[in-house]
Length: 206
Image 1: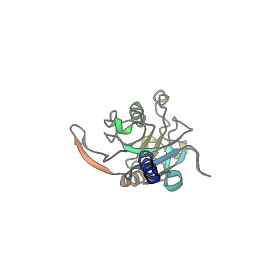
Image 2: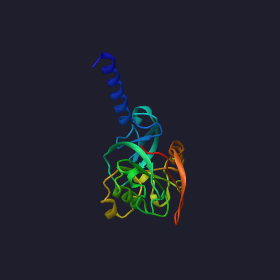
Image 3: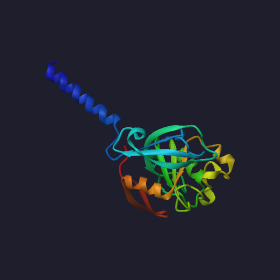
Image 4: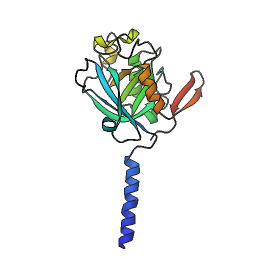
């Protein structure tokens, strides 16, 4: 094999491997971890997000998330985030192939938060982000209705403990404003599902 041919082969292999390893240009990556920043109150954790990057912890911006009071207390996860369909988690996600091995995103709604987490877990999600629907009075989680408040050390403190003991993946609760920041960064398309109405799904998932 000539030297130019050998170099061409190396470049070809490098490009192929890079495309397999690197996230797609439309990918929104998220990092969740239980390590708190200095002076953060119990239950409040940081979530890093970034688009078109390799490492959200180093390159991303952060938002605050409230950990599940009865959920996992030690974890570290980094993956693409995918909007679950239906968005409110009323049933197991229909887009299970896209969610498997990734972080599932849900809207708050009539379904219990723990049920949404279990639905995602059942289809292979490795973590869950739950977006508030405006019931939190402020960005500090001082009062979020039935979901609880920061002063309780996490969300869903008064939920059925038997269900939470089945949860094996991290689950964080974020405010409506923070949720909108995430949605604005995602490439989504609107679809209509009979009996469920208008839903949003990822346009392309790597």
